Image 1 (cartoon, rainbow, N blue to C red):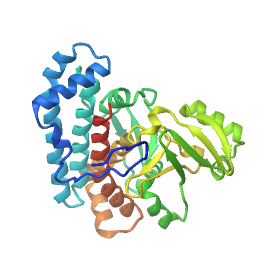
Image 2: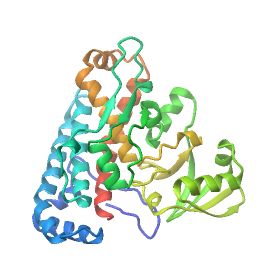
Image 3: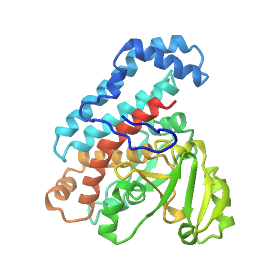
Image 4: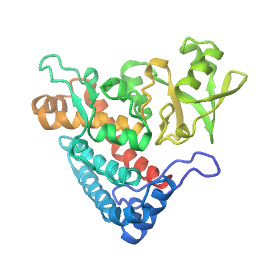
Length: 328
């Protein structure tokens, strides 16, 4: 396993189906010490007592997640999204009890916390389908406790807009639509260089762009260097698993920024995966006819996007969950 080393971003390697690195937590003794340390650092009362109370639960969440992901790796596409979604939910709960030792404190946060539109049987298009974040449930709860965001209640997102924010799907979109939705940027430690082309695409002057990024993402403009603008980025954006502005392609070990300012979702990628996978899981469970037509007839581009996304999330989400746990 490689972490961020000497400030240089290195690719994160993890053997998935063995779950090797997450299995380091499969000991009550180690997990208790780990939770006590996390609770203390995060200023949570009764760190020792809460670490005793939660160490077994924490392990059970990880073990249950492992079972779902293992089954998903052997399962056909027809049921894979359902297993991946429930595995992801267990990983989120493991992350949650490192920040909220009393989770779940009431029953209203047990629901998934997302809704989808009622399906239109005719001319249904997956890319245009929407999800909406509810006031209660797991989604808003983990957004608040893991990423400090609680202002997204009732926000709606289309599948296309969410999928466009996953860098590993950029080549798929380019193949299908001959359009790039993100631009490469160079990042080192907490410094990034944004090409002048991005500023032009955002239809802004340099000073307006710097102001915009400072206001929305707490970036701090440093200077202009040839055809690039140099910024110091916020602590949240330095880590790919918490960033709400930069997009990180794990396979290419490359950072990107949305090509248009309207494409900023201001959501961490773990939340984006949750929202997409919730919808695909709902389709796989309740829209059997549409789902099987999609999988057997290969009529639309939706099939390729869904298949590619599932490949990405099966590999990437557990890595991000592990990194979240290790970097507290």
